[in-house]
Length: 134
Image 1 (cartoon, rainbow, N blue to C red):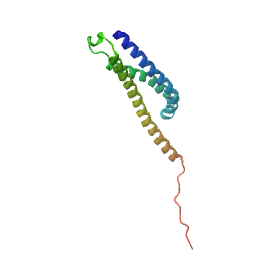
Image 2 (image 1 turned 30 degrees about the vertical axis):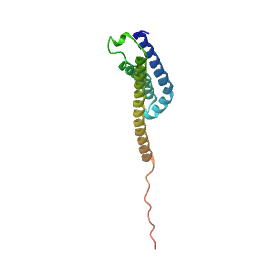
Image 3 (image 1 turned 90 degrees about the vertical axis):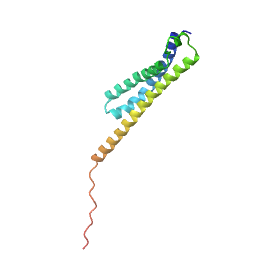
Image 4 (image 1 turned 60 degrees about the horizontal axis):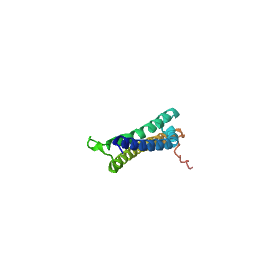
């Protein structure tokens, strides 16, 4: 297998896998983002952003494991393929982990805002007054 063909086949497999994963997560992610972002338009934007960024992060990870010199690029074998697949999957894992971290922080902030607004909507309680005894 030529180096270019090997690189392109690894890239195609990894980016396709990342795109499938991102598209599979998109409906559930959109529902969560509607609550966190406050509007459906913002939620759609961030869901689309994640669909684009997860495959790009995977491809970026893949680029870190490509052949670094002309001498390395003359042959393409299993160790290079394994390194490229590992680096691409690490890029995908990092992208999904960072997305989850940001969502967790956003959900926590959303819940704090909801709890505060719920408390503000409740009528104030009057302290219990003791009745005077004769």
